Length: 536
Image 1: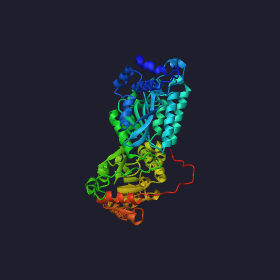
Image 2: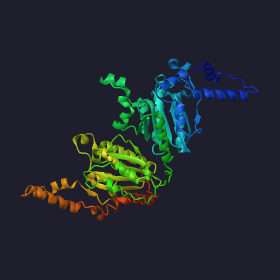
Image 3: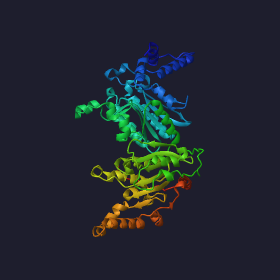
Image 4: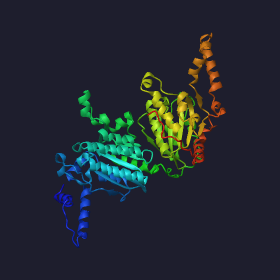
C-alpha cells in the first residue's frame, strides 16, 4: 500500500471540523478515497493474485456486468475486531465487494471476494455485507451471483465468522426457487464456505484455480494418511466429472464469466415471471428428416442423443448442464421457437442410456430447477431400464431413483414426453409417463413400451414351452415374435390412451412446438400443504 493510499485509508478515522467552504474539498477527498479502494490493498497483493492466473475482484466484476452499470454499496465497511493484531489492519471493503448492475440489460446482484484482503476470509462485517446484498436481491426479485475466492471463516474472529456463514446459508435456502442463484468458484472455497454453492442453482468452476472441499489435503493426510493435492481433492474436474457438484467447468475465468452472462440472459429474473421469448430465424415448421438417419431402428444399437437435440432445438444451440457427470442422462436448456425449455434425455452411448443413482439425482435436480422457474420440460426417452447390480441396490437406487420420480410428479410446468425407441419397466414410468402426470406423451413408430425387453419377457413367460420343445431355439424365436406382436407393437400404448399420438420423426420439432404453444398458459392449483417430504 502506498503512503498516499495509507493516508486516505486513515483520514476518515480523524475528526474533521465542519468548515464553511469545505464541501468541495471533502468531495474531492471522497473521490480520491473511492479510487484508492477500487485500486485495492497494494500493488504487491495484486501482482500475487495475477501471478496465480487469477483476475482481481474488480476485473471479474467488469467482465460480469454491462460496462459502467455496476453500483457498489458498503465500500467503506471495515471490521471491528481487535483480536490478534486485527485492530491495526482494517482495510475498507473487508475483503468482499457487493452491489448490483446490468447483464444484457437485466438487473443482477453480485458479491465477490477479494483474496488480496485477508485471503477473502469471512468475518462479521464481511458476512453482514453479503447478508444485506442477498436480502436486497430477494426483495428486488433479481438473480444473485457469487464470485467465490475465499479462504473460509476468518479464524481471528471466532464464532462470529461461523454465524456469518449461517446467515448466508439461511438466505440461500430462502432464495431457492425464488431467484436464480449462481456460484462462480474462482479460487479456494473450503470448509463451511462450500455449502453455500451447494445450495445454489448453478456452480461454475475453473480448472487449476478453483477448489472446493470440506476438509483440506493437510487434514485428510493427518486423519487418513492419504496424500492428495488440492486439485485432486476438490478441483474443477473432480467436481465436474466425479461428484457432480460443478454444473460447468472451464479453462479460464474469462470464458467462465462469459457463460455466466449467457446463462443469465436465458433465465427469468425470479419465479414470478416467465422466461423471455427470443425468436430466431429457425422456422417452427422446419422438418427434422435427419432424425430418420440419426436414430437406428435396432433398439440395441447406440447413437448420440446430442444429435437429436441439435436437430430439434432452435439453430441447434443448447446449454448442457453437468455434461461430464452421469453422462447416461443429458440435461440441457434450449429454445424452441424462441421459448426456453428444459430437455432431459437418455444417452444411449453412455451405459446404454440406463438410469442409475447419479443420473437419477442429476435429473431430479434439473426437473426441480426448471419447475421452480417456469421452464417447460421435454423428456426424450430411449431407456432400457434402471441399471441392475448389487452396487446400485446397496447404495440406494430405490431411494435415489425416487428423487427423479418425485420431482416429475411434483412439477407443474408444461411436460411433454417423447418416446423415440424403447421404454422399459420402472424407468419408463419415472421418465414423465402419462401415468405420473405428463401433459402429453408422444412416440415415434419405432417405440417399444413394455415391462422389459421382448427377449427377457419371452424367456420368463414361455420358459416351460421352450424347455419342453423338441426345437428350443425355434420355439423361443416363435414365442419372441408372438410377444412382440401382441404387446410391443408401436401402437399398443396409443390404443390404450397412454400415448397421445404416434408421430412422424420428421415432424418432431413442429409437433413439440405446437404442444408447447397449447400448454403455454397451463395452470395447476396449489396443493394445501406446508410442503412434501421428498426422498432427499
